[in-house]
Amino acid sequence: MPDGKLTLITGRSLKQGTGLNKGKDSSEYREAVTTVEMNGGDMTRLGLCDGDLVKIKTSHGEATVQCRRAELPEGMAFIAYGPLSSCLIGAETHASGMPDSKGLEVEMERIS
Image (cartoon, rainbow, N blue to C red; front, side, top):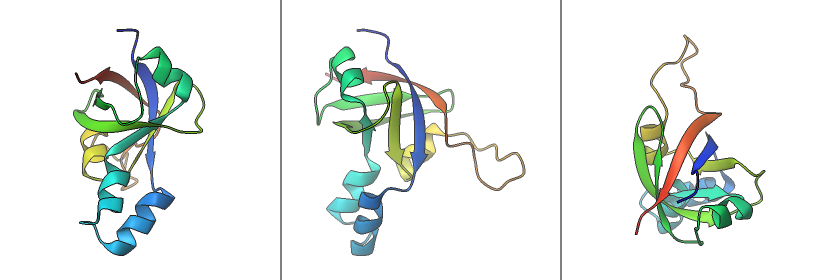
């Protein structure tokens, strides 16, 4: 498989907020926090299609999520805050109260 390294950013998303209004058990919310979005060119390079399962690994942990094409710069991936994104970011807050959640180097691997 080609080099699966990307830069991950995490944050709130509109889909996540809409789903949250329906509750954390809603399918909308669960989909928002279990999907990684990335550039279509990166998906092609990595041999991925919308809906494929991928394992994302950082130096802090790993998570398995679905992938989806999005309007993002090449080399960048996004996942909404949630239980799985928390597995990928470290606990260090540098006294800010918020862990580093932007610019994380990740490796992605398609799950057969």
